[in-house]
Image (cartoon, rainbow, N blue to C red; front, top):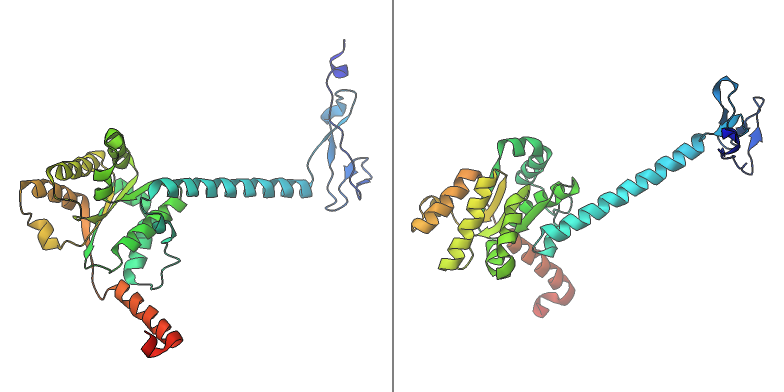
Length: 276
């Protein structure tokens, strides 16, 4: 049995406006490019002297479908990383683009993301410290979301949640936190002051220190309080945090207070001064 009688070469089905060119090949009625080509050297396969090739329209359509597929795959990955990365789901919406106020701190945090490869190589962590409501958690979440958009896994949580985590799965959970490319610990120092709590905090901080990966910490504690711990347990934790991070002060008026005042002005314009 001859091989060319077994192999079947696909035949191009003509479109509505397709035509035969002077070369004898089928051409696309839209872009004009050939939709088939001759085998070289007069070769025949399956009794045919030609084979299908994509025209410009078909290549564009394929590229479009591939782009849409990759975009959807990216969105699915980002969604999954956000689901896994944030202990507080509200923070998934905190991004540089949604910030109501653009400050130098915001631009610095944006640059931190842009230079992420250098940050990783230098293990350059950050300590956001300052008064309540000055935007520490918001900008930390902005960093997290911007990195997740680059498909970099990030874990953002607080140590109180780690302490309260299911006992049987706590060890694996802590290991996951320590292995994350970026770990963000929000409201550091607000966890319960118990022996078990302190030991859990040390496990996380020490595990992260050993991992050699970047850490971002937000805290309402002052730098003086961090540098002058009250006891040995605090000392071993605070020392680790300070050795892994560079302090960044968040000062100025409370953004939360300004937002409350803005809401009050809006409501007064609706209900009048007496109504509010």
